[in-house]
Image 1 (cartoon, helix red, strand yellow):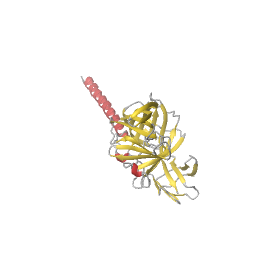
Image 2 (cartoon, helix red, strand yellow; image 1 turned 60 degrees about the horizontal axis):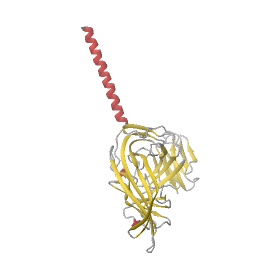
Image 3 (cartoon, helix red, strand yellow; image 1 turned 180 degrees about the vertical axis):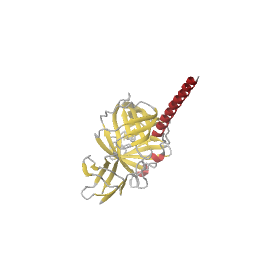
Image 4 (cartoon, helix red, strand yellow; image 1 turned 45 degrees about the vertical axis):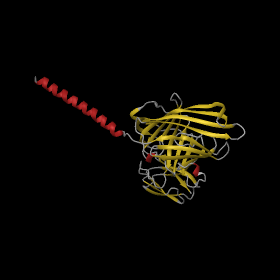
Length: 366
């Protein structure tokens, strides 16, 4: 009986140890991840600029279609095949601002590229993509073309939703919109209209932690799916005499969004079958003067700078790159407070990288 009693006690102790080990594992997992909510304050604002690198032939091995909670993704080591600067400038000095009464800021460049995190105009022309944010998310109102192809101003009807807020895990939003470009308009002849219909759904389908060369973040993933259809119409008055479908494209993108970063950390472009075609990854940011990023303790100021820039809380080796990705300065064992003189650097955009943490900051030299 004594032997059986001791065995029973040992068995209970073993079971309790197993339970505590299991609970500890759950606690560690819980503390390693944090479910987040993306809010309006987490969207880009007038004055924000982001350095985006693009891997055109990704070799990462990730089950991108996997959904759920407590997930982790490793996007380190991506190739920089090309670089883009997404500059969200305020509309204060635009002569045509009155044509886009809702918009607060814009990007400038080819309409099919510079459309923020998703979206795009039906024009390949260079021009101004017009954005605004409100409590329900980020929207594109229209596009002002630099030249030709009918009217210079084209509009989304209604405004196209690029990111909804607040966004929590399992939230879903749908958006149906269209662009119309009047190519020619003549009172005594046929008129020609180019139209793009965009029907899409945004779903917060996963959350967890992500590792990138820019840093590690807790993220909420937004999956954008849908279809865009381009059509050409010939009409006179209210009568359509001819219409044809010109192009059709599948929308399938994954946005990995973190708090206070203001731009998706990673954007994965996929085909219909979830095969990864390209990855856009954030590698630098300049925030407007009234914003202070809080996702690390590094400081770089003034920005833009002229004669020098102050670096705080950097460690080890620091390198300065120009917009072509070439190293123009290298500092070994940088002190915690360092004054970097800019006399030998041309006016332009540069980014600074700390080797030990892969922390990257974009700055401008005047």
